[in-house]
Length: 393
Image (tube, rainbow, N blue to C red; front, top):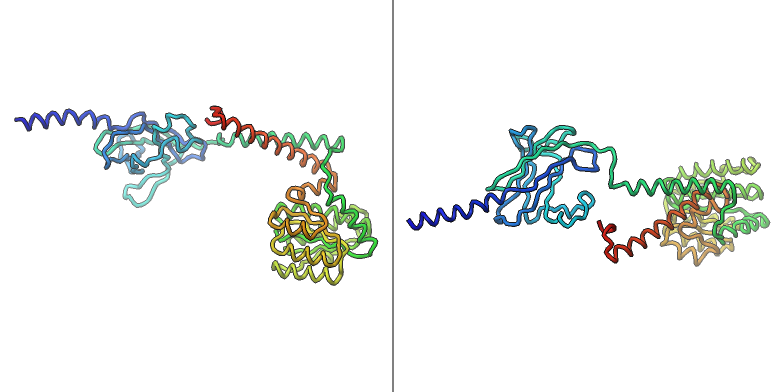
């Protein structure tokens, strides 16, 4: 009789615990800021569970089933909403809620997974082994706008507006650009080549036409070609990439036409030196030694061949002006060249030389945008350091 009474008492004590083990505060909704085919399930974390307990998630197209397995989660390792602040924010209460993004479920045979369809009602069931379960309804929807990228959109629109404003200003007045000694010396180098009756050698880097540094170098080449045509000085352009060579030929040709000297263009002077890195360097070094150009312009992205080219040009007595955003090669250019444009000075060079309103306006607008970004980073760091809650949320 005593054993029967004890068993009855234990049953009464365990029953509330089992009932309390059923998931609470269960919600299902379309996963925000995506292309659809996903439902997010959230629920309050259960602290008192047996070690063997697992959250079991299943889904059905009908409230009466059948339900198909989605996933099983260990309550100890299941992610919380605090682990994904981009989606759920930084509320402290998020640490007490689990979540799961549901994108597919097992087919009836349990072999393949079926992807969720957009605008299809689904019934998601969340339960704990040995306890109750909860069923909620949701639909997966495609979102036309990703709200997590709102700040990117605002900044892009703001910077674009600043660039357009500066382009209009550049058409009305001459905007100030910090003096670049290497570009100021360009006329001196070209004038020296003209006086000596020797060619000017323009060397591209090793990158293809998709590289920003190569595009900047080609823009500089256009200004150099225009001035050499005006001075009646021979310009030679060494290339490693066939596409870069074709673009360079067209740029030099157009520059000669703009200078009123179409006869100054010689397609043979814009040549493909070699496709291999060190074969390319050796071919240009041989040209420097044989023809001894009065000026070497090394513009673009360089690798280990930078020192070979610059050192050879230095031994021939040429004026050398280098420009690159390859920070690993800057020390070699600085020690062997007369002038070196570093980093973003390469991209500012075409605007500096041409004074074209579009290039000037773009340059000034980008500089202002960078200044704003730096100010925002400094201000944000200070506010985060003092625990200003809107920055942390």
